[in-house]
Amino acid sequence: MKKILVCSVLMICLQTGFSQQNIQKKIQTQLIMAENGSIVDLEEGTFTFSSSLSMEDKKNIIIRGKGMDKTILSFKGQTEGAEGLRVSNGENITIENMTLQDSKGDLIKTMNVKGITFRNVKVEWTGEPSEKNGGYGLYPVQCQEVMIDNCVAIGASDAGIYVGQSKNIEVKNSKAYHNVAGIEIENSLYASVHDCESYENTGGILVFDLPDLVQKKGGFCKVFNNHIHDNNFPNFAPKGNIVASVPDGTGILLLAANNVEIFENKIINNKSIGTGIISYFMTEKPNNDKEYYPYPTAISIHDNDYQRQNTRPTGRGRMGLMFRFKLKFGKDVPHILYDGIIDPQTLDAQGNTLADKKICVKNNKNQSFVNIDAEHDFKGISRDVSKHDCTLEAIKLVRNEK
Image (cartoon, rainbow, N blue to C red; front, side):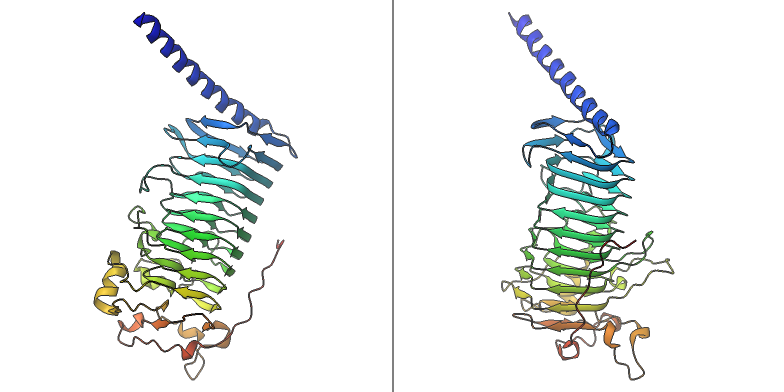
């Protein structure tokens, strides 16, 4: 009787294994054989994969599940490849109505795609947040016409929703939590992030320009009408990653960003920095890229609602040391922090910042500001915002740029 029972269990396990292998083979074949203009329909259910799925050189394809949390592609225990799904060298690709989980690396990476839409997609690492989790949930890089709508990202050890080195981007109606960075726009042009909720990350929304990348300079980014709150999660990025230096308690962080407009957001209970404006020099990392511009310029922060509890900022990491020994704000942490490091080339003969390069802070609810004068070893720390009481022209986004 015991032998029969063991054999039955073994047969069920073998059948399940073969079934999963067949499903993986079936879906990968669909992606390979899909004709331009077709729909790849995925069934309802939870399906486990041992290797990455991929599609390349396709046009006008929809990859469609039966719904977020109805079609679930799990890469837990993945043995081959790094990404969950990789799409490259395509045009007008839509990925919608599904959940991807637990890949070794990035969950969905799209590269060199002109016209990529993620709609109703969840990407998550289901265990405790860990540096062993993949870096990015949604990861379009070197793409054009990027749309991310009604998506959810959880557990990324870098950024849950990340757009890098891309042009013409819209991220909307989406949620990100328990990531190191909730939403990140990096070295990208003409981006808008709006009507999103980013919470319980280390940092809520990041706009970064970094050296040594193919697309050298981003800019013209609008971040508006978002709820960015309680981003006090301990940083779990692998050591050496640029986001490993993001202090827990960060709402919005602009690093060497240019032409960025932050407005009409609710920036609530981020204990360390409501909005930070810093140069690349603050990272203390080397820069050998002669084409890289390390300063933030043309930043407009206006009409946001800032609130925070009366609590101390982070005590962890380099920023924690700065708060303890240099800045010494105690519990009275200003909502908006500027490092004060200025490009001399942006000053006129009188030493004033050129009108179109200014950092402008205006009309924010509960507004408080500090220039920490990092360039002069924090000797001239000032809470006087009057030099930044200015207005820049609203950012205009360019669509369908060639």
